[in-house]
Length: 135
Image (cartoon, rainbow, N blue to C red; front, side, top):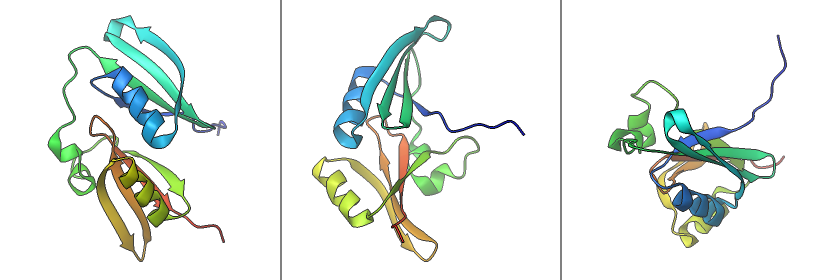
C-alpha cells in the first residue's frame, strides 16, 4: 500500500476573517496562506499550528451548519464527515482555558472509554479534544 500521512482538516464558515481570528485566538493557529478557488466561489486560507493544518473556506451562498450537526450525539445520526480530534494532556486544564477564551463548549465526556470534549468554532463546526495523558 502507498504510504501517506495526515495533511489537514477543513471547515466551511460564513466569514473567513472571523474564522482566522477565532482559530488564532482560541486555538493558537496562525495564518499560513490564502488563495481563491474561482469555480467554487471560495476564499480559502490555511492556518497552521506546528505540524497541524486547517483549511478554512468561505463560499459564496453557503448554507449555515444545520442545528443537528452542532451536537455530537445528533451529528452521528447523519452520514458523512463528523469532526477532527486533537490530543490534549489534561481535560480540566483545557476546559478552563476554553472557558477563559469564551469558547462554545458543546459536550464534555468522562467515561470508562475515555475523556474529552467538543467545542464549536465561530460557525458551529465541532472540534473534539481527547485526553491522553503521558504514561
